[in-house]
Length: 451
Image (spheres, rainbow, N blue to C red):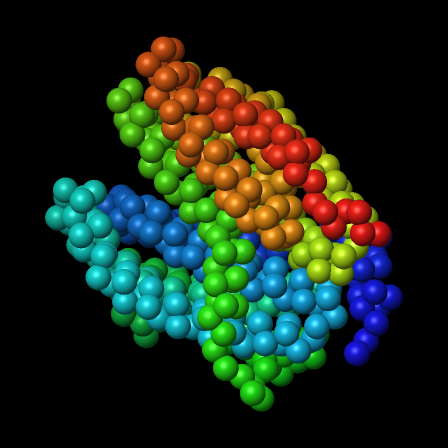
């Protein structure tokens, strides 16, 4: 057995360079992940506004599909890093096989469920028969990307759990590049290919995810990695399945709540104008570009914290949390500064009207004030997730985007109108941050006394 304490970079490398080296590749991967829907929207918008509307209406479903994949992937990631920290190579290899089996079976089940619920979902939200038909054309194909998405993200997190952040980035990029090439070819029927419209956009997305999955299996099985699939004596372990679900659930909450939050915010904003809804959609795309940077940081910090938690190295565990929090604050602060200094420029990217600029510029500056608190709370949730205290991580994410946010929106919009939506984000993030500070001081981790 190799001496992980002396040889593994997660146990020995200086913390700040380690965090940066671990965070940059997943940041690129997450940017690529986010680009699937963006690229589809860009090309489909050249077909017609109805086609763009159909793909946009599918965004909450595809977001939830990716969130489900990340749920399983992060659970596998944390367990592998933890057992490597304990120097239990056999158990780490067992987690690899259990995770791939779980992601494959769960992904197949979800495809069936999606095919069943697609029609009633769009019937509830779409009145226009033409747009409804386009939604079905797009999603009946997209539903099938759940399986390759879940499997390739599981393998991505398996490899990241060992500290190798570069290989997952490359097979993620490969899938996005294929999608980018096939989108115009299949949508508009270039060369020998027939014009498929929105079906072409969906098919190119499916093929992109499938290509990433094939490459992911190749990297795991045919290249040298610190873990491998355990086949000898393997048997399904439902206890491990449960651990994967429980540990990864906060990441699902964090990724899925964004889609729900946008829906609820739009319910409040539609009362004032459709322009307000359009503004919030534009803002959310800009905000996601900033939040993705912190999510990349988190994906780099989680395996470091999980490894050192498993290794009972309290000093490095705390270093990872503190440095990660500082970097998160700097990143979110930089994003807030950009929105505050250049709100008009940001909105003009989305062809903002004068009406949108009139309330959008102050709205951006108000919501940007919440970003630093967002970074602190998100890092705290990841710290709790990495150290096995999952319930605190779940509560933190629910407070930020649901439990505090929605009642605050309701009260403030009743008192001060549309501006209440913007101010509610500040209140929710500040109160959540105070909750995190209270829990951190009230419930210190016993491991910290073990040096």
